[in-house]
Each structure stands twice: as C-alpha cells, then as structure tokens.
Image (cartoon, rainbow, N blue to C red; front, top):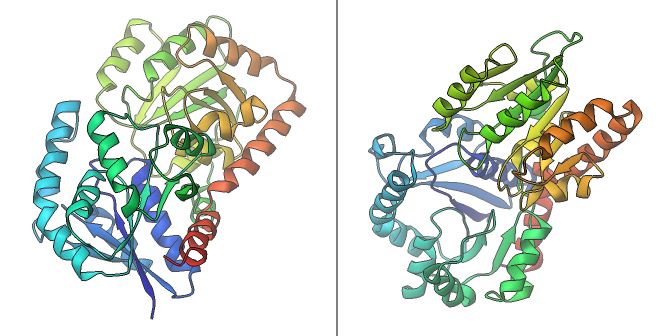
Length: 384
C-alpha cells in the first residue's frame, strides 16, 4: 500500500514556491513507482486554477471548502496579505484538524502559513509525520522562535533549498542539527522546458537583457532600471525586457517615462512562455534584495543564459559559485550593476561560454528528479 505525501502550502500568488510544490508532487508521482501518493491540500481555492494540470499528472487535490473564497481575498500589500493569511488560518483550523486526524502515519510537508499545522501539533496528538520546508532566511520574531522551539520534537525533518540556508538554520540552534537537510527545490521540469524553448524573435546586432519576477520590492527592479539607464550612456545596442506583474508597476513606468528610455525598455507583464524569452535573450539579470534559491536564475542558467546577479542571500552566490559561473555584484549598491554590465560587454566569448556551462551544471541540482531522489532518501532511509 502506498504512503501518502501531503502538501500544505496555501499561498496568495503564483510565486516560485507555488510551482516548486507542484513540481515536487509531480516528481513523487512520476518517480516513486506508486510507492508514494502525492496529495495537495486546497485550503481556500488557491489550487483551483491548477487542478487540470494536477489531474493530468495523477495528483489528488483535497478541498477544504466547495466555495472558492480565495478569489475574494485581498492579495497585494503587506497589511492586506496579512489579513488574508489570517482568514485562511481561521477557516482552516477545523478542516485541518479533521484531516490530520484522518491521515495517521502519513507524511505532511508544510510550507507557507506553517504556523497553523505547527501550532495544532502542539495541542493534538496527531500521528502524522511532519517535514517543515523553509525558504528564504526567516524573520525570527519571538513568537516564531518559540513555536519552532516547541515544535522541534514534533518534526521529523527541516528542509532548506540551499546549503547556505541550512547552515544558517543550524547556527541558530533551535532544531536538532541532524534533522536539518539540504533539499533543492523542484524547479526544473526539464521535459516541459524543452517543449517551451522556442525563439521569440530572430537575433540581430541588438543584445537582449531579460529580467523576470513579480514587480515587488524584493525584486528591486527600480534599481535595475536606474543602473540600466546609466549603462545606456555607455552602450546603446542593449534592450531590456522585464516580465511580470505587481504593485511596483506604476513606479517603474513613471521612471521609464521620466528618463525617456521607453525605446530601450519593455515591461511585458505576465507571459505564458517565459522560456521562449530566455531562449532569445543574451543576458539574464537578477537584481533581487533576497532570494532562496531564486527560481528564475535556475531556469535562466538551464536555458544557457549568461547571468549577472546581486549577491543577495541566499541562492545566487551558491548557484553562480561565488561568481565563477556568472557575475555577482553587491546588492543594491550604486554603480555595482552598471560596472557588471560593462564587464560583461567587454568579456571574452570563451570565458562567457565557460561560465554558462558551469551555471547550467549547477542548475541541474534543482531538477525534479534530483529533488525526488533526496526527498525519497529522507522518507525511506529515515523510515518516516
């Protein structure tokens, strides 16, 4: 009889964590030879748009409510999103208690709004085995720290998507060190990526820079535009395309208009096929203030793009091998990205090729197959 692997990851936006949860479930279904059965918990309707994809991959979805109240939740802005998280927590309490009681001795992977399952496990004697998945360096407020300390004995493993993060979590000494494991996110579904790798445009003497992500403070696209505008005074044969939607869109549009660089910059919004843009670009730039690991940088590396990235915590430095597999610049530092762009423009083609090969090799750590191999090792060898 197969063991269930249950995913708890309620989220408001289709960010990297959303897709890595899907890919993790797909990897379990694809490679476990029916020994493991992935199931995604649909707390508020957040997985409704993906039901068809999940069904095609034989992944079951358990709905807490027939009504899709997710579409009514405010999603943008700090206070609005916190209000929505609170609503999800309150409405999920009793369905989650019932669900965890029912699924004894199964495996529960929790990510996003982890406070609810952790808190419930402190007061109920659930027999379910729990893995806490951490991404990004978490803000350790007093409440979270205490919940983690009390939850240590109730957790089988704590997984981190980068080695740097796993080392940082070990240093705070809240969890038993032997429970902390490096588990690369399931980012690359290689078969699907190859299907989408089509040239968006024919190449010419114009060099194309690509940036991808939600238009939020984290992605720091205003800094990217500021540095690119200065770079245009040095080189005019570059064009910048930014893919994504978000609350900073108006700010970015205003900057482009004021600096009169609309000829050189395109805000394309959300696109269906990111990989076609990656295929037809020369350079990928990541300007984020923090990432862990940085899904788009992994995808760009796999698609043979040269990468310039901020050295923000935690993923980029590790994926770019401290700059050996690309160019790293000091995050948000004036002229740091400008100088990196100039450096790339003058770089020898053979060196560019060598760095691209190394970054692609590093990206393969984040394939769905590699993710499954490590996850299955956690499950089987530890007998959870």
